[in-house]
Length: 253
Image (cartoon, rainbow, N blue to C red; front, side, top):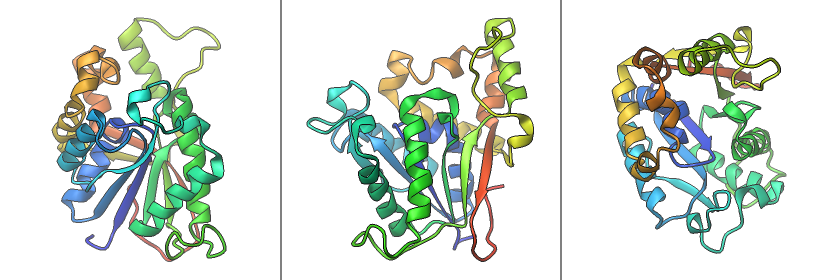
C-alpha cells in the first residue's frame, strides 16, 4: 500500500475531517500518501493553524491552502477574492498544480450537490472535476508540473436512506414534501468505508478546529445528533466513484 496515494480537495478547514477524515486516517495508517487541498483561508490565520493540527492527527501532511476568502469572512484571506468569485479557469489551474505535485491514485471531493448544497462545496466539486481531467493533458496549464491522471475520482456523499433516518432522529419527523435533502439514492453509492476503527481520530481532528467548535458552526449537526446517530456519521463514509482509463489500482473501497 505504500505506493498508493490519495488527494482530497475541500472548500474549508474542517471539511477534511467531517467528510473524509476516516478515509484519510485509514489510508495514512496503512502507509499510503495522503494530502488535502483547502480552497479557502490563508496561511497565518487561526483556521489555517487548526487545519494543520487536524491534518497532523489524520496523517495527511501539511496544509495545501489556495488562500481564497471564505464567503464574507474578510479575515479568512485579507486582500484575496472570495473563492466563489475566482475565475473558474484560475481555480482549476491551482488544483491541477497540486494534482501534478501529489500524483494521486485517487482524488476525493464533494458530490455534485456539494454534499448538502453549500455553494462553495458545489464550486469546489466543479473545479475538482475539471482539474482531474485537465491534469492529464500536457497542453493544459503548462508550467504546473508533469501531466498526471488519477485512476478515479470519489465524491463524498450519503445514501438517502441514511439521510432520512438521521432526519427523523434530529427533527422527530419526515422532511416536508419537496424539501431538498443531502445525499443520493442508495444505488448511486459506489463505495462504503467502515471507518469505525478511526472514528476517535476523526472526532479528534474535528475538535482540532477549536474556533468552529467554540461557535458551534460545523459541529452543530454532529453534536446535536443522538449518540447512536452520531456514531453512524463518525463511523461511515460513502462515495460515488468516477473511473478513468489507466492501469488497475487499489481504490478507497
